[in-house]
Length: 206
Image (cartoon, rainbow, N blue to C red; front, side, top):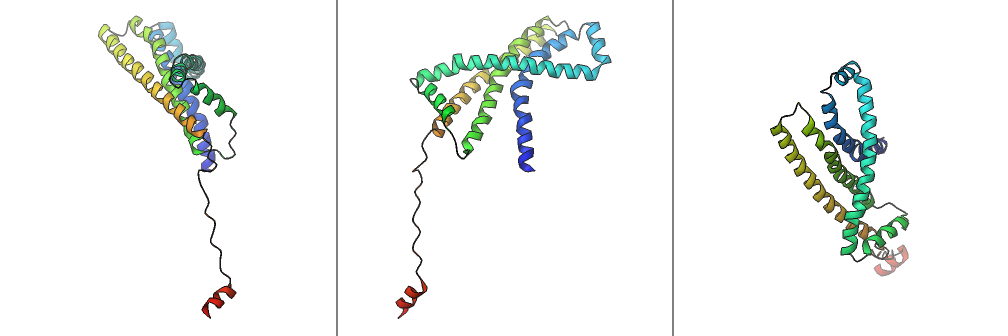
């Protein structure tokens, strides 16, 4: 039961972090902008359930597009920089990791999957902030000072998450490098001592 709950939590948590949250970040500003229009506000007030369902579907759709953009950003920026620093070893280890079969899944591979989800979040949220940033300045309900403050906070979060994405990507490369190491022969089994029989014990006692 515990394993089933853990798998269910991972199946829900990973898409939530990597798809829904970046997509919701991208559309939330525009949602508040359109709430200034009477017809849109009336539609939302009369159909709460349908609005929530549409927002969820839209956040998943936008989040999937953002995930594609984040993958391109990772390939064009993070992979290229690390591949240059390692003189091509990063790309070779990536393909070698995909080809390597694991008889028993190491704990490091589960940690690697968590890091991948974190990287998607750290690349997706800045893209979502860039998409929703324009809505802050054209929203008549937000004053100039408030828009300026929101923009500054958004830029700080934008830069912070990109720096964290670079650090996470580096840890992913190092962890993948460690998982590719041949572990056969890392541990040597000590041969068990021979157990003396009753006859040999009795002969020693004589």
